[in-house]
Length: 75
Image (cartoon, rainbow, N blue to C red; front, side, top):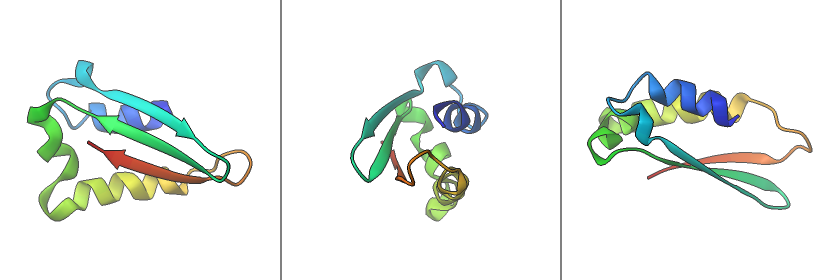
């Protein structure tokens, strides 16, 4: 899942070397915290959040083992 998020975001940003994805796993959910270079935040979020919503849609559609919910936080 981490590789999927990184590959999607890397194609959008100017500084792909600054992409950091931290994972927090709990009983019923897995939270991915995405951090990018400050100049790239707007590119990842998009106008009215459309790109962020599209990224979340793709990530949420992917399955994890154990039926855990997936969340993506963009910072």
